[in-house]
Length: 272
Image 1 (tube, rainbow, N blue to C red):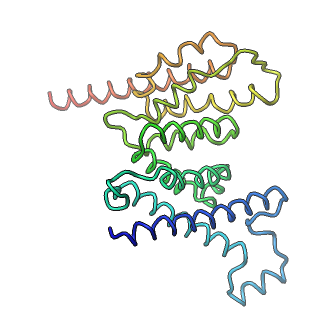
Image 2: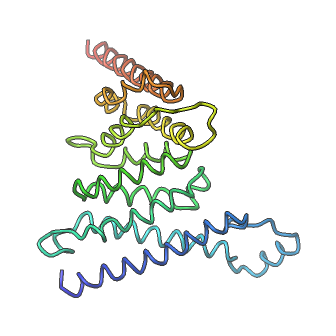
Image 3: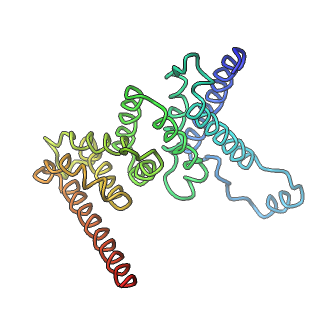
C-alpha cells in the first residue's frame, strides 16, 4: 500500500471510533434515564402519522447508524488482521490502532444483555472485532484483551455466554490461546474473604465469572479438560457457585465423551 493509504486508514479508523464512542455513550446514558433508542410506546394518532409519512423515526435512524458503524469497524479489524504487511511498514502493527476495535467492542458488549439487546447493540460484530484482534496480535495485546474480558465478566452477569461464544470464534490451532488464558485467570481468582451473603463486591464478581466455566465446557469440552488442572484448586474453595460451575463442566465433558463413543460405535457397526 502507498504511504497515503497507510496514513488515511488510521485517520478514518480513529474517526469511526470517535463516532461510535459517542453513539454508544449516548445510548448508555439514554438507557440509564429510561429513554434509550428502543422504540417508545406510541399513541394511536402517532402510529397513524408514522404509517402515512413513511419517514424513519429517530430510534430507527440511530439503530441503522449503529449497525453500519459496527459493520465498518468489523471490516477495519478484519483488514488489519489479514493485511498487516500492506498496512504497516515492515509488517510491524501499531498496537494502539490494532486495539481500537476492541475498545469500542467492550462498550457494545456491555449493552448486549439479551438476544434482542445483543442484536440492537451489534454484539455479534463486537465479538468478531475482538476475535480478529486476538488472531492478529502478539502476547502483549492478548494480555490486554484477556484483562478487559475478565473485568467484563466480573462486572456484568450477561457476559459469560458471550465470552464463551468469542472463544469459539478465534483460531484454535495449534491451541485456543484466548480460552486458555481466560481459564488461567479464573484459576487465579482470589476467593479469600468470600461471603455468600455479600450482595456486591467480590461475591458478585465470582457469581458472574463462574458460569463462564460451564458455558465454555458446553461448547469446548476438550479444551476445558486439557486445562482442568487450572480449576482444580477452586474445588476446595468457599464459593459454592464456583464449585458448582466446575462440577457442571465435568458433566458437559462426560456427556460429550458419551456421545462421541456412541457415534464411534455406530460407525463401527455400520462398517461391520
